Amino acid sequence: MILNLITFASQLHKQAAVLSSHEMVLNELEKYFTVNLVDYHDIDKLTDNDFQLLFIATGGVERLVIQHFESLPRPAILLADGMQNSLAAALEISAWLRSRGMKSEILHGELSEIIKRIFVLHSNFKAQKALSGSRIGVVGTPAPWLIASNVDYLLAKRRWGIEYTDIPLERVYEYFARITDDEVGEACATFAGKALACREAAPEDLIKAMRLYRALKQLAVEENLSALTLNCFKLIEQLGTTGCLALALLNDEGIIAGCEGDLQSVFTQLVMKVLTGKSSFMANPSMINARTNEIVLAHCTVGVAQTEKYIIRSHFETETGIGIQGIMPTGHVTLVKCGGECLDEYYLSTGTLTENTNYLNMCRTQVRVKLDTPAEYFLRNPLGNHHIMVQGNYAMQLHEFMQANGCRRME
Image (tube, rainbow, N blue to C red; front, side, top):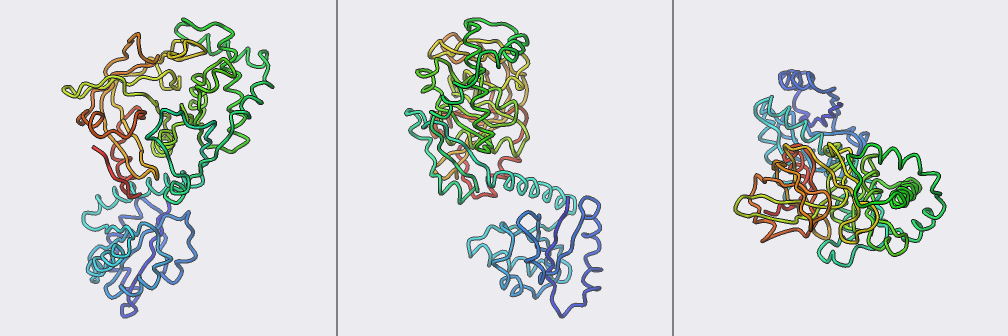
């Protein structure tokens, strides 16, 4: 990891004396990072792909910094160990930057804490870069019942650097028609062979569902999609199958895939992927106990890589096609949802997956989660229906990332 320190030092101080006075902090940084000291005159030689901090080396550099305002990294992270009046200058600079609407933070204090914070900031930086330029395919229009899950494409691009692109379902139908049953026969046999059981679904249902998976994968590759969300209910009338299997397999392969054309949820899934490296479970909150802070999450698709075992079922609402009943491992989980038309709000909670439930009148994959925060959020201030669950505790990374991007936490 290369740490570029844009160094601001007063011309009244000799360069050698400046560096020697900060020897302790620089030596500690070099234990963890490749430190590249960059004179402020050369700030324009760095690119947006270079991780940068502002190293306030002396006092008296306030005007030097503001003269380079347009070239400063966003957010502006100021490193100041206090030597040579550096902290005094950093405080003044930080206040000025924030008055101009730029997020700013000062790194100062115990060196071990500074190192930890730099790792968090670098993680945020990498995630933002991974998101920037991502293309999210909206295959078909969002489901009509998602009345609170809209996204303003332009505002989302300005804030996050992502691009939503509308793709008509007719392209899926075209690719689907080209794929023969024979082409997917082996894949169907392999998938069925690894299942714990097969209940309502028939072999022809599995063949159709696998053909749809191939069609969506071809579309994702051709459109260079990082993620896609599919209006799966519209497919049923035309193709006689559901998208549950296709979305599960795409998620397993690293192509983030969400249900029902939900624009906010697929973005949340993408954020989870770039921050944690993991695929996630998009689900309906189906039962809530505000007294015990327990929630049952349910949906008819889940990436099989997230499960310990899976059962091939039909789709719950329509009793057609292929649904997946995944048996997921118990243990720590993180529940999150990004909301708002410009994706500037979020809900976040850790919890423990305690049980895989099997209610008859719910979607196929069902998990009970004991939340570490009040479940009343869902009843009083929810960010819509679908929420996203990932295995493991990633609360700190997600909170830091959303806060760094000026988002408001809903509780």
